[in-house]
Image (tube, rainbow, N blue to C red; front, side, top):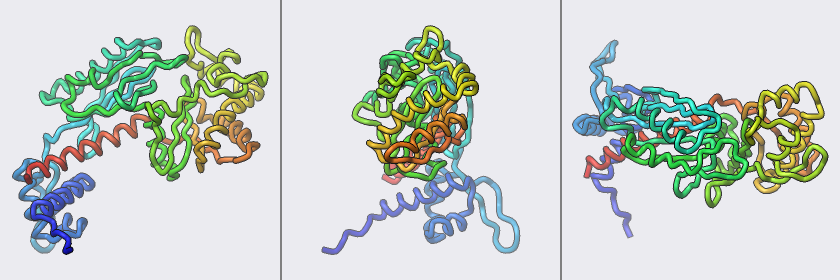
Length: 372
């Protein structure tokens, strides 16, 4: 059977997408430059540019090439294609940004939170940050991507309360909070998962375990380049994994810090400043922590078979911490190299990247819709 030829509508849609993707990558291009980058003929690109300009997606910038020969007009994405909202909910507060389809930050807002913030306070802070960024735009952001320092139910996007979690904001529903400020979908995931995605770009390894060691404890397993979220989205919640305590007694990882007196008063959060002081003053504390964390990571190595372990978080990136954990793992049956995380604000970095990609896809889809 002779395969069916693609329809003219499909060919136009593919060409339009190539033009838009080229302008998203290079900001401004002439028709000849777009043709060279896409491998599509100049007449076909010219037709696509005219269609996209008529749809309000592309504009002539008014700039022209210089030099010998006929000058060419530069084209770019048209203004007013909307923004995406990016938000990070953490013990330090809510940090939010609006970004455009070129990845530029249009606005930024921060609303602080008390250390033991509950669901209602966190919801108010998220709504206030979003309102500051979108009040000047009658349409609102076209979508939102949220990073939360709590477990996230992958089916509902609601935050999940687990025992002993240091940052408790109940069953906060970011999508419901942002409904008045965002016209499209709201994507929510745990901050450690977002951080792992950012580190994936940095380490260049498709199979690794990312561990966050800060006020809270978290882990993300990356296999074949993708974060494995688990059935409910709670994969990587390592606080209750049993390991070796200070005197060799088995206990949940989170209890090790209580036994060492390294928790904040009236909280299950780790006192990072006290921990750093203790590790710097006493090798035994560093080795005790490395043994406890190493026990958990040994289980992760056995189950996930990573090529690398990446340590993030305030005290996870300390050279002394990393060296002690690496020594601990070297004695195991399957030694795995250990590296310190390198991306600043990795959770916001990855969430921002996803927001830009999703916004670009919305713009491409609007071009397809115009073809119908």
